[in-house]
Image 1 (spheres, rainbow, N blue to C red):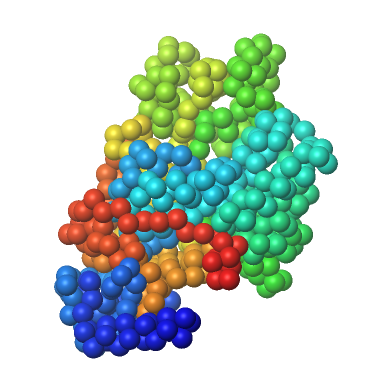
Image 2 (tube, rainbow, N blue to C red; image 1 turned 90 degrees about the horizontal axis):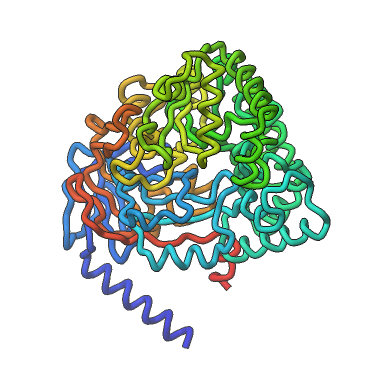
Length: 529
């Protein structure tokens, strides 16, 4: 039977070779294959979802031919830090990602994920997205499942329960463990607990991806903790949205990047990722002391209604503002506030004035507490230096990531990174400011993340690899989304193929939904047996 199968395969390949036809032929383009090598003029032939030929002179006829003259042909981009957890059905076409050249998203970051990985990935396949999706297992959600939002150490029994959940996630196809150590309950977790869970991920050839405990004043201590987890669990480390928060920390990228370089010399397999903006985005709750946020919304509301707690929160917030050398909370801008959408797009300083309060930082802390009492809000925080962004970008083992979900047009005032991360790198930092080369930028978006997250048939233009391909104009590619008007798709991506299916044609989404679930190393081993 095996000999018969092999013979049939040989006959099929011979017939294909003699026929020399393919589903899609991309010709006359500048091919940048994702390896970091220079571009060259060539063609790519695609059939049955795979790249069947690539080179300067290939003798194929396409059922559909794309003339890529004057355009770049590259592997589809891999966004290593996204947050899709549960809202993928809002736009299964994933237009905000696809029109930014993204064909694969890694979700489950910052400690937040679907705990039942098998069920989640099965749901992704049934949903039929336009993008491929792989997931990490989130520590925060694993901990919530066992301890809720409790501010305490896990008992030995609870630790075993978390380890069992982690092991099941890896067996079901997770890529590794993620943490969000500025979020509840991750912030209540000590390092040994994380090492124990990371060891399980390591046993299944996974990695450890972290939103560190601090990205401001204590950033070096946070990096040391991430590296200690790498050492302790003998696991590859990915430090997410690498940055310096707060004006008082501008310039410290010289120190933090040097720490990553030293760790790699030591033998720790550590890499980083960043978004190419000087503003971050997360919950407004990060302005509040972490101990106030334990045990859920009812507890938060009850605490913030006590005068002594409110005084404590005000003192804490004013101290942090003073460190930033600012007089107002103008750097914090509400992205989405369900209780009153008129707040969307306005800073805490502006909202405070809208509410008729005095124009000072103390009353602005009251405004933040009222928002938290009413359920909280997402926000954009302006607080990074451009020179740090550029210096971090020049580090060669640094990937680009949106740190975003699938955007829904005109919903809230979100960070523009959810629409334009890759286009911004290609337009601002490659074409205009020449911070890095085009070939290097594409390597960071393709083969580097594919290698790190073990997506073995993605990230390169190679025969036999999945036909995730972007074709764009290096002269006109541009991010259109801004902080003031975020809801705008990127320009310049003429064609996008996902698993060999034309998903963008002449810069328009075709409606195709050919994405699929991508599994971690354990599932790949099972499939190979």
